[in-house]
Figure 1 (tube, rainbow, N blue to C red):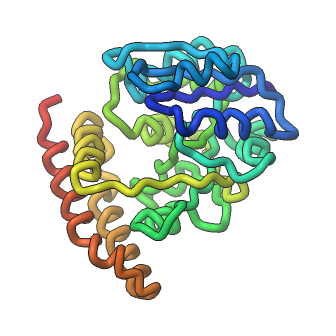
Figure 2: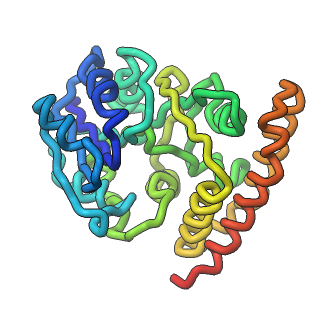
Length: 283
């Protein structure tokens, strides 16, 4: 099957060279096209792309949307499989893409997403552990009653979807989602009887060291997403967040990770407040 890779870029000058080299080195796959969509900024992203003779599309900031930008690129694709990535991932090896897409090619699932490992010992070291375990897993509609919202978890920092099914489900329904477009489509897949795979052998390194303000903004957007898609709230959303907080604190104490312990309460409070304020945002 042919594969198109879609990657939005914004102020990506420190990422693009290494990322592109990692993509073109992938083995045992048939990459049809790598599409970069650059949101215009004052950095050197476009200059680097031009110097490397890499094709890209440039848009202005007001045009960018996590869902609509990806949807537009997906609609233009003719490949069998669409792979979404973000600019700040570090790809582990030459078989990342093969492991991500092989079960879609074999007809075992319609969507797949990679394992993510944090690059440092911050809070995301433990959230990544929780969300991306060492063992692969298949998710279907049968898992919803037991797992709740976690049945719809996926990340398009590194994900793949069968284009035919993406099209059949009408992509993101032309909605301008503030974030969590990956959960939006995974919910549609699962509830329509399709299968999603978490691929632990497809590995990327990906994490952030957010400050309080950045963390608040992230969870404000997540709260806004749940307000816009309130049907998801019945799937034990708050319970999932509470379970994550307990896991992070427990693991940080086990590791005597004082950096995380000291940041834990401000971090979790900013998440909680951001979510609650976002949920109250007018739709």
